[in-house]
Image 1 (cartoon, one colour):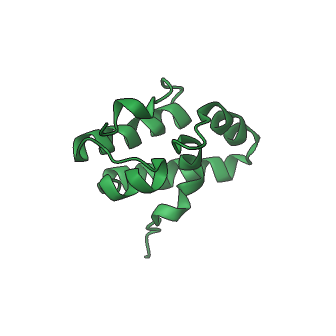
Image 2 (cartoon, one colour):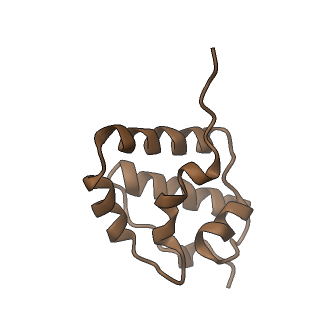
Length: 101
């Protein structure tokens, strides 16, 4: 049996809304709501897998936000918060809480 192991690009559309140059998280919820249920579930599953495997860190934070995270813990927290926002009706992540300024 082969398990699906998503690449970062599988969820990159979720993170486009958190780029510091085009920050628009509210659009993410609208776009997710308009997606077919199977696509929503795939995005949810893929991001949950990447989080569980600790595959989202400093480099991915920089790619997603165009910013440098304070450290790996803050980068991971950002991705966990994005997941909660996108799939669990969590609070909107404010990228300024996570970046190194």
